[in-house]
Image 1 (cartoon, rainbow, N blue to C red):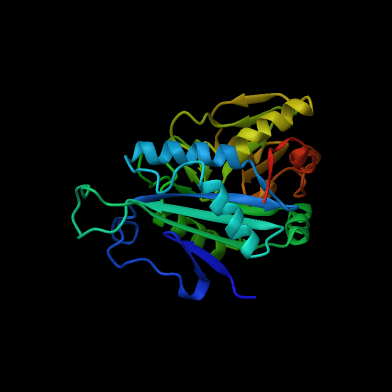
Image 2: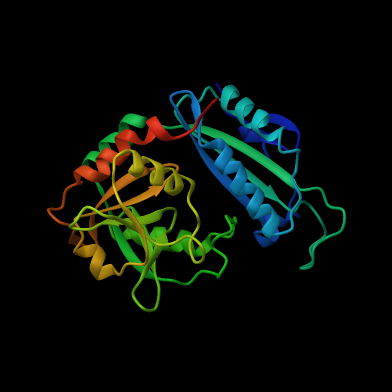
Length: 286
């Protein structure tokens, strides 16, 4: 069956889904987005994703495109029409269509696009069982990465560089050598003492929804978390390293810049976090 998208009030065939050429998301990257995992017929942590969407919109002074209570209905409908039991649902809100000018247009209605696609959970499990590799790149993004903006060109370039190096993710590194986050993920290490370490999310990184839920998973498993910065050198010497995101959950890192982490295999603590995740995450019917 053909894929279906939602575009500004209409459900249309994915192949026929278009926005205007003067949509400010296209002209200026003047918009925000969210990606919510769909797993086992449920949308995972949807209230938290919508809460972060609300914050991103407020930070950019963009109005909600529909009332907050209607958006979950649209998300469920797109997931249903695409028959997605495992996969993701993507939503994007821009400031809308207006004649090209840098200042905010007056009276413009925000644009809303929602798409969904299937994924293979077995493939993700196989990847977690073997782990993935990361490279490091200098931080070159704007200062407001706490906003989930559609302006992702530095991330695109970093992840392309990772692919060319035979890796699956790139970590942005501050000038002092501190790890910030991945191109599309939050970064974690596990110390030799079994303590989980991740950078504080008050400034400089995106407050990942999966990251937030993993705090609860760690508490359930009796694991300690420290919110602090860590260096690339500390990560390379760690007991385990992993990334988190809506599309990876907790994904083991087995090499950094070509150097193996520990024995070069996924660690047991990371895999235990991954296995316990859906017992803790909030699940809304899709």
